[in-house]
Length: 211
Image (tube, rainbow, N blue to C red; front, side):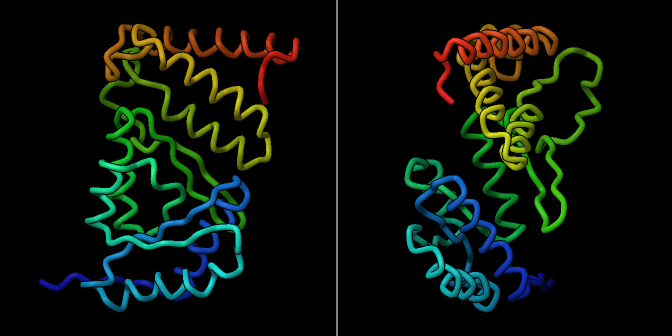
């Protein structure tokens, strides 16, 4: 059996440039290219060559590269060493699930599909029809996707307010849904988020909220 990796120079350049643009826009200082160039030599070289060609256009951002298996270990043992990661579709699937597992599972992972002319934001886990209508679903993933959407739209203050409300709720275990070890159902969890948003709105009006 042969597995074929289809990869184009144009696609590599687009995704690498998108990673550097994201880093620049969000004041990030490092972009890590993840590949398997020691085995998939031509496919790996395509991504690395795109990085080498584009990185000089962003002098304030460091570029490094990691092999996918090493990157998985690094994210588990030293996640604080990494900032923006760019890779191909297959390795992206692997790393996104690994990263979600480090922070609580797919129920807390937001996702975005961003193109040149349109963008779609959604929860990584999909629709989860098996628990629909039972009040068990964790809304964090879709809310985190909403945060990403607000940032993409340039609504940075609103994005920070929502993200703060989510994080404040997640810090209290009993306010979390069962998948995170809490006791709240979907409606209760959402209620805690709303109350935190209302509290943030009051603090924003009084100048106490940091935007």
